[in-house]
Image (cartoon, rainbow, N blue to C red):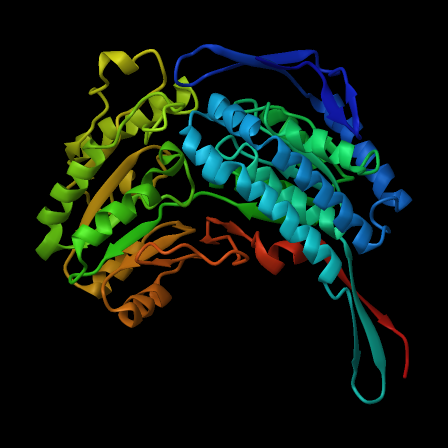
Length: 480
């Protein structure tokens, strides 16, 4: 059991002014995992006040980059010592398989923290420019107070994409994790406090939508960094516009995997499956639309359905489990509803389905992984983000049509192209309007920018782009 009865405000543990708490339950069993305090508007106000005071004092913003780097490395060391405990915590809150928490959800945040610790030290903040007559000093400064709002599908990893670069840049940060997974993010509070981060620089205040909206609206917040739905992103962008606050928005996706006519399905299916089903399908970058040439559509559907049906669904603590439960009962009902909708729209369930849950899984919030065949791209199951273990197979007759289908979406976050000719696949990838594309399932190089086109977001995270997002540019005329 993990009990967090206090909020971390301005570097100190404090009783919530809201008086609200929430029970956290294991999505696989419904058993109680712990309890956490939830922050309200007054708690957000206190956190922003502490952040503003710390930033204006220069205690962190004016610290030498080397000093910020050392604190961040110490925090990463402390997180690493708790790696086993944190993996269990994430799986208990979220329901993703423990092996995935151990492989990605815990090591990635540690890596992000170390990466930006080094960038704080190595980044060139000052540059002189001259036109032959005049000379300017172009300098980079921290953007100020950052309001970071994160979703439940990455309890540690998504906050790290905001905290690591913003702290490295010298910002003060108020992090608002979601009520579904409020426990694990506090590991950052423990680590940074022990590592020597000055008081006031970091606050962690789990809360609901009202608390998040209050943080976005707060006049002392200079930048909002948000990961979540496109609908929420639009509201944040509109609210931030009223005072021209800076935003980084990492939003939804409906990514297309384009399987070219000469692709080897024996190679494609086992590599594509984890890209679609990661975090039990609850990932914005999931490859949920599978575009296949009509000549191999039947073979692909059969192979994909067989592979999906073979995935072990069950206890996420079991090393052999591939797919665990949805994060909440509400999310389970949402995903099941989309599967039923797909059938009503004319899609065929090749495997899985909303009503196929075996008795042994009915104590948790499970949805059987599902492949929908005979899908048209105009269907809602092809256009809307389901956020569950559901793949939609769409046939095409030419590569031009495949590209058109891939681009026929309000989203543009991720995607993939599959075929034996890498040059051809890259040429297709260049035509897809999306922020990230994988060729044949290979992962992106670490340090590559993460973000999307269209309604999948504004700005980029990770890499140098993710660091610059928390800096402001100032030009100072200094003369020759």
